Length: 283
Image (cartoon, rainbow, N blue to C red; front, side, top):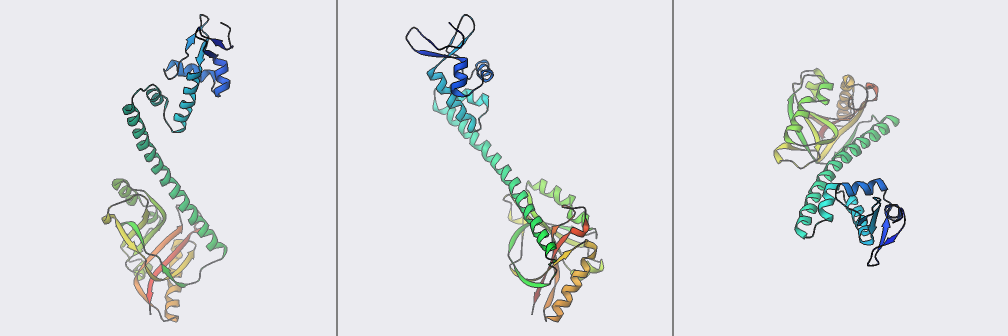
């Protein structure tokens, strides 16, 4: 037998050398040898000179192998599938792969949702800053469900926003969050005076969770104003909103809601922080 040339069996079946198979199927010789070593696809004939030859049927199996690879099967899984002569082992293998890929899809969706929502916040903050959008206005705030945790407020905005207790809680209930950090205060006046001792941290949950882990916010008209700059100066924005409400004959509710569009999670430059302050208001 000659190395690298097509030969025929005694029955007249054409056999292809490993070099020919490599070219026809676009599979490296190294991969073909490895497939043989682990028992996935072996040559139909090996010459006295240790040259490998493959039948047309075996070449077709290489195409099947590529399709299994496209579906995400590992080599050891492919070996069981390609050598199976019954449906049951194949059904188990495919069902296991479906479950595995669904888990991977969920993980990717969590990442995609988180990145997309964070990008949207960056765009919102940039737009606010570029337009110096600090005007007070009444707006309808859409009702949304948020994961939440009631906590003691120690008058430290960074501790409240980059919140270790909140992160630990989310890990304990097996959920992931996305979007802006929101903190609700029972009294915006106490928030201004430094007397506020309670807060509720809220963020959008990505994964399904129990009703007791969720709270509803919004679904009403609220007074809104963007604050650009350090959180220590949020009092100026609250006072501006209080004056606007008085001038336009609106009565402000006691509680408030701060939505941190960009903050210490995003930038070390406090002058670039963008916070939306929301207070329920009515005439």
